[in-house]
Image (cartoon, rainbow, N blue to C red; front, side):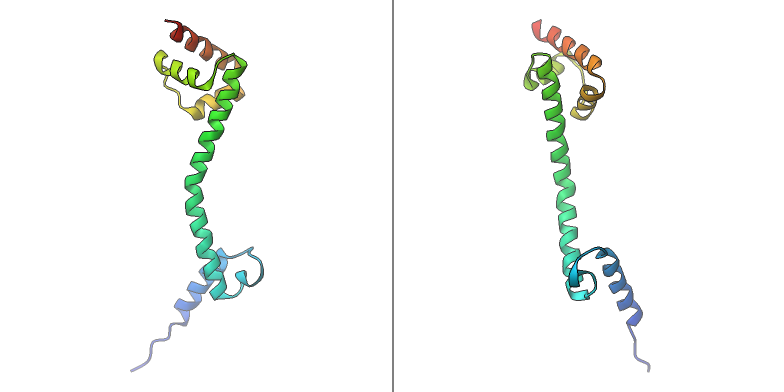
Length: 119
């Protein structure tokens, strides 16, 4: 009965880890034991930061909307409240984009919000 050699499988596993560890410094890129630790840690960071990115973008959008509303003598919270009362359903991503790229359109939105708040 012949023995099972697992060189192909091991080689494939090592190759996969080393390809993911490309660009790392020192032994992290060419010593399997060290590389596997670094790659696993990098994957943990990537998983965590995919969620953090969503938070960061939301805060960025809020800051941009706040800056744009303050140019029209209004606060962010009053603006968002007014949007809800006016029945305008735009998310923060779109609002921030409008505030940056189309200030005239944003000014019209602010006027609509003012009208809904004064009722």
